[in-house]
Image (cartoon, rainbow, N blue to C red; front, side, top):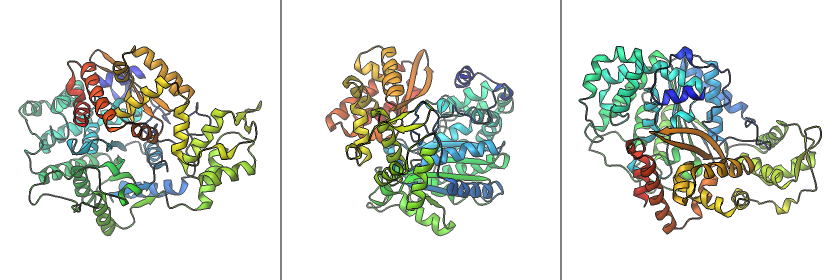
Length: 524
């Protein structure tokens, strides 16, 4: 199966029937960094305590499938399970509706306005068969790949014939050509348009923004007439202004379509300050979401206006009750055999108040210290009296303690990893530290991964002849914490070092990592 994914990434044609079928794809790790995991970290993470929210999302999807397109947001604090809920819902939807197309994009904390339309570029790239972009192939389930690959002839023809201004702004023309030529059906139906593709030199700013927005919205509606779309936008608290404007435009034009647009954001970051990204230049009369006030987050007026138009479109995970939070703690514990008494459960709830991240991390801390062990029957039990006062009261302290257990050289390696982002690459760290790539992979997978459960493997990728080994922090808060340990001088130096490492690793293929290079050299 891995070989099939690699062939897809290299644009070798694979008939949809040749791809394996999975009823439930356990290898899909779209949300490995945010998933709520039980104490047994060697098994896939359980999904508990979100029955009501899943039912709400099911109802929204049913409405969209019946032609009532809509936008819905999932909000909550970091670690509340927003991305986990979105991902689990997407998996459920894929398994339930055989013709549903799922595609997603993320905003990045450190991208800034130098990377406009990032989540929407990700979405359109996937909808037009781009499995080459670093990150795409390792984040897709096999069922997603099959459906997206089968969609390519239709989506490519629509893009080339009806919405050509999107090329080079939202999708790479060179990559689109390679994808079309790698797909016999697409190559046949798009033969005439391929000649025109070579002549296109559209760049951001060449086409009026409103025309770009109109073509993007119409492209989605065209695809949705063939197959319904579930489009996922994660981490909208980091959205750039251009993407926010496009989101507002598209959201107002979902009526009558089979599109469900589902986004997540951290409520506190929306309420407590402006977006980190400055507004992008805009010509007079072009579409905007109204977010002009400097003391206002770019999403605030957008959310207000969409709620005014469409009513209650937000699922707030922070608006829980003590009863529901306690039920979450019990469900999490009981997803594994255990003999943990009521006193333990009550104390755990008292300490965490049912916050998913706090609860999971405290349980992991107990397991790693040996306070919780499996008995001969395989059930979790208290090995000794738990010193509750010795446990950290805040998740930052939990993270600090877990990272502090690593050997100092590996702590330094993860600091470098935090500069690259939530996802990072072993070969980049190895080059900066001057160590062998295999030694770095061994330490990351063995010590930081299997032993300390701070990171998860995201598979391999080849960029030209260079093997790249990808990892992701199990929670973005680990990356935030490590990045926060660096002062301004260290950040500048390491961003430059990461950029230089990527430039070296991608020798001859720097176009494939242009965004990474731009971000790190800009930060330096």
